[in-house]
Length: 243
Image 1 (cartoon, rainbow, N blue to C red):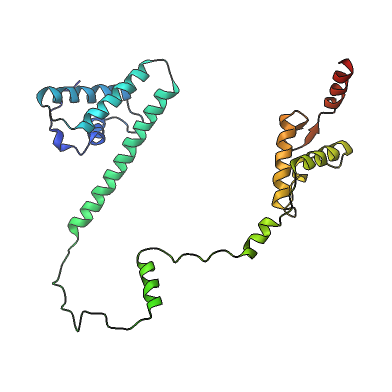
Image 2: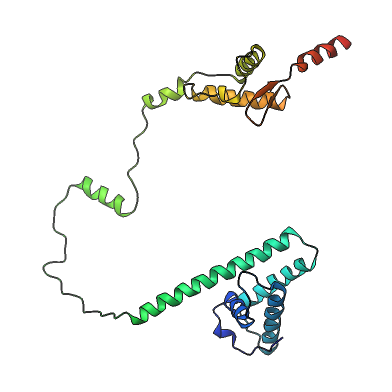
């Protein structure tokens, strides 16, 4: 491995140092030799720690993270090791893109001429003298603070649709569903729900379907067809007779 000599202050952070090592070793940013990169980075940090004690904690923290990644990569292929590798590669690609954009913006800023003039003197009195009603001043204060006036208390009429909504029991929907499956009027899950029905009815229907599926009374095919288990009642009768 080539011996690298540089100052830590030349880099803005651990990602900047890692990106420098990638460029120094002429690696493809989208296909990095992770093990070689980790070895070089940890060797650099260890060398710097021997010479000086004030190495930035963020560089040491990244070194510890890379050592953990190296331990995972030495094991047989594991999802955790692949996840850590992809995460580091993604961070380096994102940092490289941000650095390129920052360089372009910096070059534009250097070529841009900026002139600042002295502030213009105020004409007339600085006090605000226009009269306003107190209500307008209160509203302006709430707007300025990013707040809104307290909403009025809801009237009883607004609660009427909630209070007077019909109550639909899950048991009634279970019976309705089984009756439709047995008589053949119900065969697909799409027939259970309708926009014309109330929200309470649709919710009760959904809970009833879950209960029937959980109990093994109804099965749902991949195409949405519903199948009723007709042997359930016969097995129950045989069990009672046997007892």
